[in-house]
Length: 255
Image (tube, rainbow, N blue to C red):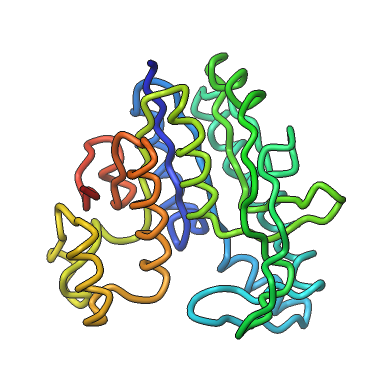
């Protein structure tokens, strides 16, 4: 099977021009088939504020009201997505921007209300990669925004880490998939105050211990949950790293 590298990028990396350009320069160096999944939460928060729409977060997860859904659809599916596509074209990589609604790529349902009402947040039900594979096999780079749909016309805001893991898991049936979660740090840190304290290999038992002690917390927990699930379902390698190391493969490797 051919190799496919999936890069999920979020945080400051995707939303500041200098760091985004550095990431895409490294992305170009990766050989073989490529796919990029992006976030854009900081930009969505800023634009929502400018529109007078309040941002609510619970444990690092966005509450998506009807008004906020309009903002994230514009920001993720439009502004951030097309900015990345244009930057890839400038580097000689043919790219196309997609959401989960395009090609019926990712269907989801609105998350049920339990302790928290997350609003228009989607939990993934089904991933359909038949058209996506045609693009990949033609050396087109799909750039996927963190939006899904319910099959009845409703767009849903869906965690980008989850989307990357779900796509990686499904595509692992057709390619040797390498999934990289790219953010500001060099990897998962044993001391959050020390950028050099990278944990180079992490298994589920150590992850549970670090999470219990609070060393690993907030947004890193769902990222690692998704990563371990993808690894268990056939993804060759899952790496947590920063932009400058995506072509060298240094960072925290899940084992």
